Amino acid sequence: MTEHRKQPQGTVPWFEMVGAEMSRAASRSGLSPDLTVSLVERYSDGTELGEGLVQGLRFDIVAGKPSFRVGVRPDERGDVTIVVTAAAARRLNALYGGDPTYPAARAAFLASGAMRVDGDPSRLGGWLETVHDPIVDRTSQP
Image 1: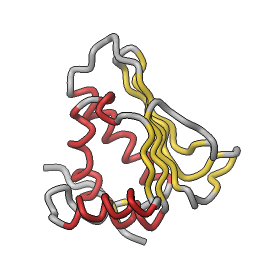
Image 2: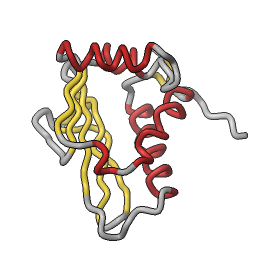
Image 3: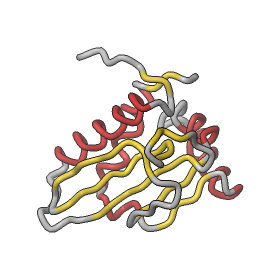
C-alpha cells in the first residue's frame, strides 16, 4: 500500500487531493458516457484563493469524464451544491463514515444550517460515498 502525505484541511493541496480522489473513484465506477452532472462544494465562510475564487471545489462529469477545479466563485452553483462552514467541514473530515457519530454530526449540521445541500447527490452515482474515508485518511487538521 502506498503511503500518502496528509494535507491540511481546506488548503489548495487538500482540495487537489479531494478532487483527485473523486476523479479516481468516479473513473473506476464505470460512468455512463451519457452522464453529465456537476457538484460545487464551498465553505460559506471560506477564505479567498485569488482570481475571485474561494475555498471549495467544482467537480464535473461531462459525457462520462470526470474533472475538477480547485476554488469556486462565491455564488457558483452546480446540479448539486453543498455549502458548509469550514468548522463543520473540519469536523466531518475528522470522522470516518462508519463512526457512529458521523451521521449524527452531519444531521446536526444540516439542521443548524452549518451545511446545506441543494440538488440530489445520488445523481453523481454511488461512488461518491466511497471517497469519504480515503479523504479522512489523507486529511490533517489545522
